[in-house]
Length: 299
Image (cartoon, rainbow, N blue to C red; front, side, top):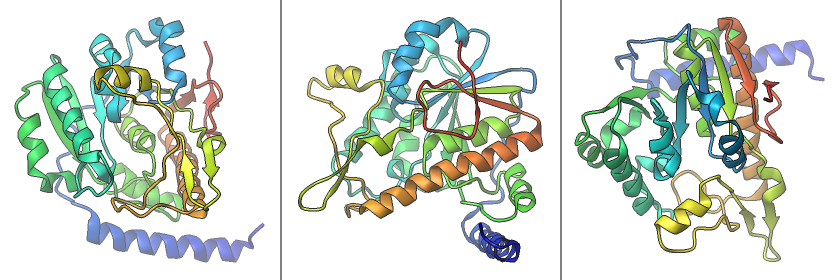
């Protein structure tokens, strides 16, 4: 165990660095969402493979609850069936110049699908950096039902009290190395009475493979893999692929991938502290989930 003085100075350094990052990266004049839901529960739908079984068996649980979905959910049949009110896109891949194979095409398929399918009020949350990308805004503006909100995804770390000060003002969030971190942060700041997470498998560790030439591959499985295979009229399978550094084409090494996982799981514990401070209950409904921060809830 680290000595207390070491932890203190570690947190002090992290908080000071967070202040610097906020001053450089945060946009302070972003309009905050003009609504909150203190009397309404929310279900945050991750895209893990377990969501398919959850929706098949427990669809009725979603009744009278607000739904929040992420990433490629719009390209599934469930999007128009469930009509979620909240949609989260936080990864830089959607907004910056893309070097990874195929991402440009995937990006436009997503925005086109949002415009084509959405026939109800939808709140789309995207990072502040997305304001600089004009092409996606031209597409989304074609749909009168979609309202865009920009959020600061500046990573905040350090003393808990300082973190919460920044969180409440939407100036930053725990490191959003996974979109569910950002989704849960937004749900907490919208003050839902209870938040349930489904499809939050996060069981990537058992899917890692290191090849004989020391390349690292990860099979990222989603509940919608079969649907996308049919819609694209081609094989869309969760075969093992390299993970890349940021928006570059450089493949991550094993320790870099595990470090990324570390930040994701640590962020959930930071959000648990934030939820406790807000007196909001967060439940993980995902069978076999690797997220160990939240109370389990099974129907």
